[in-house]
Image (cartoon, rainbow, N blue to C red; front, side, top):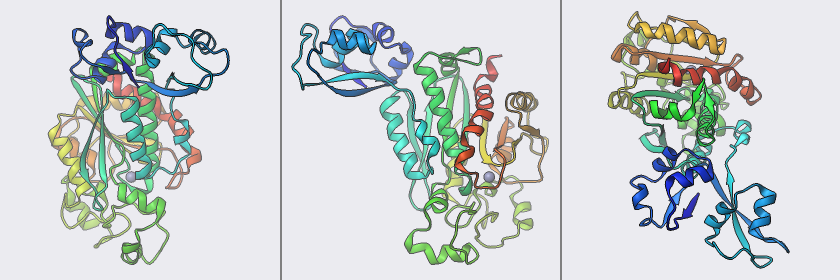
Length: 398
Ligand SMILES: [Zn+2]
């Protein structure tokens, strides 16, 4: 929400008035310090929406403030008047409404279009976030990254490597919003303030690694590729169990960590709905984007979300650092999910990350059931893993 700056106002005052940490206001307005406030005409306040309101007979800013609980000065700031308190009936003014979240997301088949809309929403409401497109899918869809916070510790989380596990995108976005609301409302998390986490951790989020695959599962094939995709899908025109990217390569079998082992033993020897590792490692743009991201950032830890099984994998060939086991114990305690050190699997993102950087990496299998997990399980999964996500952010503070 944008407001017009008045003489004598300060960031500290806005922080008090709107109940939003000053640090978040500063990060929402890069380059604006208190002494330059007078020069800038407007300033963005995170966590708020401007909602139009049509004045009724007898309305004054004073009585609107009394009935709504919105401080009168907020109304003045939004409506650019300090002196006039009476307006005409029928005139539209703006009310600042603090964001409370978008619970409807939980009931949505979450395709790449929904994610694009959510990105626009987050850009509007939380201008202290940083966004970038880290690559394009085979069909040219953006692979979005969201950054939250500025800490010395960088943590990366991603979802929807596998197309039919698209529910992981929705759950990750739900957690992001929960964290953002905790920040703008000054809430405590894990015995500390959300703001303390924001100042300690730089969180990198790629909510949908495989947008083409997710869209195929949810919306069916693009017309011009229908014939080819049905063929790759074993003659089936139902794509609900499709895991791969749109070229029939399993993105979580694409990484150079004993890729050759998977290449030999995986059943499909050509592109398919699942399990085909590709002709060589890192041939697919989605996998390349994620590998580049890890190379360009010294992530302390990564977490890749999959479904299903209510367990997580934390080791790879004995290359994981001792810290991995400590974090695994904490995850297990917080979520009730089973910590599993090794699975007989190679060439996955977390395998490669551990091998390449010798830092903690985790594959978390959310929920239990048959993929794709139904939307009706979303609330339950969110309840199970929120503690795990928070402990991931707060682990280093202990
Ligand atoms: Zn998976």
